[in-house]
Length: 202
Image (tube, rainbow, N blue to C red; front, top):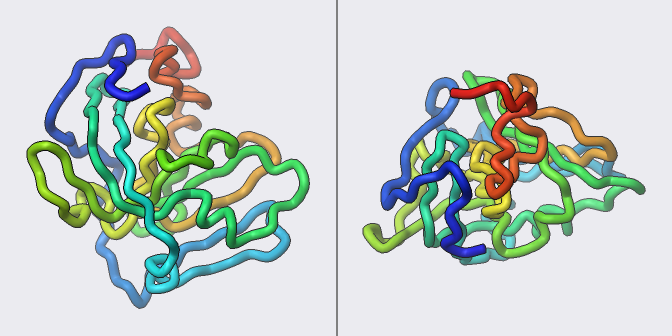
C-alpha cells in the first residue's frame, strides 16, 4: 500500500497540524496509560513503564480526511501489540477505542478501530519521527507529545489519537469522538469513507 494515493487526496511533503481543543501539556507524574474494558484484569502504566516496552521503527503513510496525504514518514514507537500482550482479553473482543486528552479530560478524545488490523508494525504509539526533510526528532506537543497513535494507512488519520491515555477493549463497535459527529465508523481512505452520511462534506 506504500505511496498509493487514495482518491480525493493530494500529496504533501509537510506534516500539517490539526487537532481538536487545546494542546496538552505533559506532566510525567500525572500521566498514565490505562488498559481496560473487556479484559480479565485492568492495567495502568506509568510513563516510565510504557517507555520500557519493546520499540519498533516503521515507515507509515498518513492520509488525512481533510484531503492531504504524506508518504514515507518514519516513526519510532511502541507497537499496539505490545500493549495487547499485557492483558488477557475476555472472549469476543473484536474492537478497541484509543483515547486521548481533550480540553483537560483524560478520555475526552477517542477513536474506534477493529482489533485485527492493528497487529503489525504499522500500528504504533509513536514518540519520534523523521522524513526526507527532517532528522530524527521527538514529537512536538502540537503533534501529540509525549505519545501519539499512528494507525495503518488503511485508515484516515483521525483514527490516530494525539496525547494518548489508554485503550478500551470492546466486543461491539462503538463510535468515537468524530464518529459521533458524523464521520465514518470504518474510515477507509481508499474507499473514501469520510462520513457516515455521504451527503456530508467539509
